[in-house]
Image 1 (cartoon, rainbow, N blue to C red):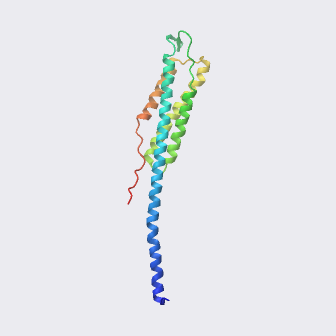
Image 2: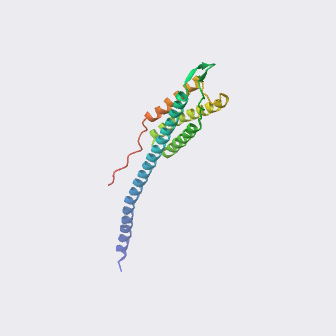
Image 3: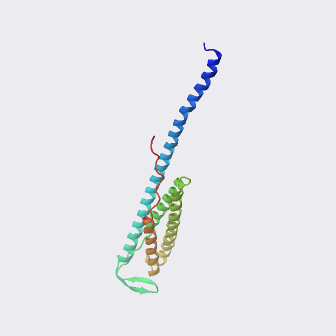
Length: 184
């Protein structure tokens, strides 16, 4: 058996060793959490950018269909008059694409909130643009039923402006997620 003085020295020494071994484990856990957070932000950013790209493509296709579907004869009372059978415009695919982009942008904001304020701010400003575009599209869809599926020149202009706004979101570079810490 150890004398009483050796026991008193052994206990603090063992406790000190235990505390020293916890430090690296905690630091490793923190690095893992940071890497996981960065990956979650990166995945959310990629999903959001893909959803915005799809919304832009849907808007472009809609504009092409509205502009080039049937030759225009003229404008009467603000409604574009076309020769032949008019191509009925359907904004539902664009609405769906915009709703998905809004959802993905909201998810990006949630993932980056408190972790990356620049990314959160960018997502918030993009969310405002997307929600405005969605509201305009819903308004246009409601008006189409009263206009026999045809857009007026003013409505075509609104849709074109919407496309420009959405394309601006693609040009806006979102700040990258925080960089991963190097392994020690």
